[in-house]
Image (cartoon, rainbow, N blue to C red; front, side, top):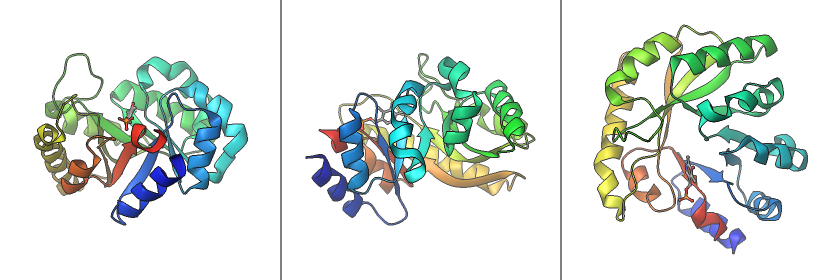
Length: 218
Ligand SMILES: *Cc1c(COP(=O)(O)O)cnc(C)c1O
């Protein structure tokens, strides 16, 4: 039951951790039930889901974009969606940040972003590889209409969440390192990692945003 799942997870999360409910593949009814049960932030992989849901929910919830931004750029960069999204968690190139900066300048909005890290350096995955992270952040920080607020990662597939622990640890180390640089226009506030199978381990390693779909909706 969605209502019970939501309440159980909200109750077990430490206060400092925010829950993003990942809505891909879920019906509007199920999503509304989750919101009524206490979900405050929706995680969106596909812009088309916003198109259907925004009329029902408007700004009663926060909207985080967690999809493959380079694929959906055409829609994501439209004024309407830039106005809707409260955070874009999957920025993985200077070019994308630059485009966001230009479009957000037009609407006078400073967009909070997370930099997506490909922590296991998987060839098929999006995200910045760890070795490039600092340089990319140093380039993006000059854009006035995007604000780097942390890091996000997907992590590799694993049959056991313990196998992800070293990757989550490395994310936290990178997060602390970037924070220690005290870069202007960069605020290392959010570390978004952990999904249905792995969020407990991710929280133990320092996540303060977890993105959960399956465990809420099934
Ligand atoms: C689907 C998805 C999740 C949630 O995965 P579950 O295993 O269903 O909890 C989290 N983050 C991203 C980017 C996703 O695409």
